[in-house]
Image (cartoon, rainbow, N blue to C red):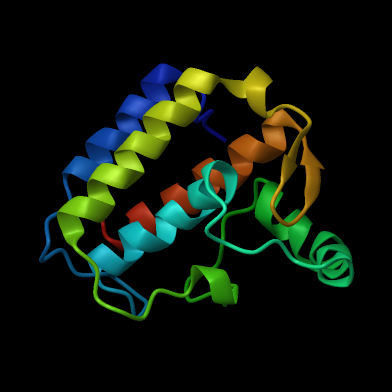
Length: 150
């Protein structure tokens, strides 16, 4: 899997994001492009903000037991996979605002680097290695950029 902490990979992902327009249509799924960008911002919001409440101990245990491996391994997500409630974007969003936020999150994450993330506590899964953080970030972005054909 490509390393999102590598500047060249980050630049490649940003170039793909910059190919999107407000009228880009998905190959699958229900989200429009602005909603998808907002959806892709959620993992970064969970790292950099307190916008999303942390799961309680029981829920965190269940997420670690059932969901974690699917999120942090290198196996691509299936099309039309179910998503967690915090990631559901059902209201309309501003394409330019969400696009700019996502690019800012990518640049901040790359600048902080993989050592910042190594053994950092995640919102839902406990401590993750730098490889697990990379997979969490890159796999999710790649899945949705492919969904929109870029």
